[in-house]
Length: 206
Image (spheres, rainbow, N blue to C red):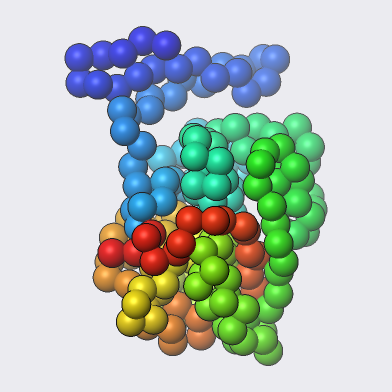
């Protein structure tokens, strides 16, 4: 590792036997809602299957944010993508892929289910946030996915006024925005995956 005058650190991270990617990590990891934040657009050259983390890595970034928070460490999308490529998780359904990612560290996938967009409801997500857990959500349409192509976000907490804090790997602006109403946060949630966390969730909201 080398540290430059602006405080950034350079690492060489081995992704495979044949390729090494140089990555710049800024001193002091970016955090939104007191949760480590990763933007998928920062990983345009990181392969995941036949695509990249930038084009098809929202799930990877959400898991990396959740795992970084849960383990109080830096779980980079680069490392998660490398593990996924090695184990071909891109060929699996989402739950199986997340279970595989979870097996690599001290994180636990508690449960998963369907949201209001797919005949379910948001009660389990709200209860999870109130208990200090974090939740990966898959949105189709609405504020977080106006193109209706499908997008992953991370529900990070709930405020005293019952508004929902969200980290969106596809948009820093939406992540830095004020906490959202339950309608905006959940109406277009198609499915969700709950991860354990012991820190009270309200500490992770503005």
